[in-house]
Length: 146
Length: 409
Image 1 (tube, chains in turn orange, purple):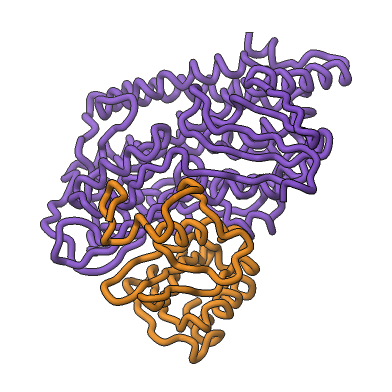
Image 2: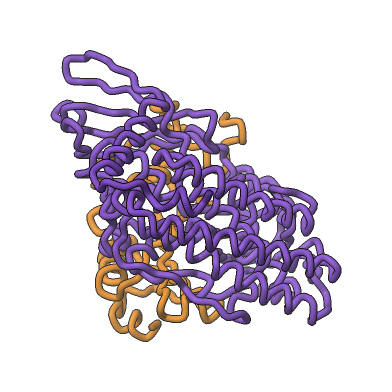
């Protein structure tokens, strides 16, 4: 399977890391991500699992987890890095309808903007939640204060 | 969105019966539902954030508190993730014990669902009997773990308690009694013409819907998508025992019930084989894990409602995860309402929502607003009554009482 992914994605793969034979992490550029996910989801038949948003010291990181259930159950995670100052990326709702909720969650908890999301409003937090306070960021304490 | 639709029926967010509050807005045209919106966060406890300030060992018990019904599913997935991160292979005996706990949980959770589904349809006999048969399973939990719920059995590198040899015959006897009861219940439910008329063709999910929303578990398997993490990416001892994945083709609520009931027998098979293995294979139940190296790990577990997914990252220096992402199965199953509820009537929505086995919190405080701002409030009782009325109507239409009553009584 991994050979087919490599063949389909070609030079869009910036880095590939095998944690073990079932957990593979592929780094792609954020401008290629939409096309990569389209190929993985629609042509190679991967199952969308979830997106993990992570705040690093000098950037933000998104991991799009996909599973190939009938190919030995491997989990392939596509990693992409976003700018720390103005984190934004294209929304994938047009490819995977179910991704809408997690994009909204990452937007409100980590402050990553999803360009082109049809309904980017609060999902877990109150509608009148303080602007620019993103509770999952490292600087924010557990009680929600900075 | 709301302005151009005729009526909004909000379902939720709170009901004292239910384990988690959630809120659905149904956009209706007469009796027919034309759109659904899901609003969550009423029970958001910030566990991902909290996890970043706990020790690796403490997180096992923290994630157990995510859900009261499938409380061991999150620890299993979390331990799988940490063990994947650090490349730990757990002792064989611990694998079988994890099997037993995981499957007992599936049994009690599926019976709980069957009972509640019966209740929503006005078949309170099903509710009473299913919950009665669930009771010995909780007793088995108490025997093994000391608790009826929140078993605290898991730890990174194995399990915390052993299953004693002298308990095994008692457990097996209880299990075989439960098996007979579930068999009777299954036959009664599957043969009942009223339940068939009420549930077949209701809330259908197609294979494409499953793919689009990433739905998992019995919801996916009822639509003929044979995904099951236990088979596809085996962990614990699921590849060491004989069992099969149950699938059906129609994707309606009836098939979801069938999948859950038939799965219960597979669970019993797994538990029986695992108990035999535990009896014959002695050894360690956990392996000491001193520190977690730098890296990232993914673990998943097939919970009663579908795949639980955990992602953890460690920087190798601190004693807590740097990031811990958790995805519960309902997170991807609930959005399928967009596909299954639309085009159905309000009286069916109750059971379609229940068919996914989310948290049923919803049905208290249902209010119907019409476009002239006249407000009419449906109580939980009225909504259930509406559902029961439809069952009664179908009973009359097919001209006979279900055989269910005779079988059970």
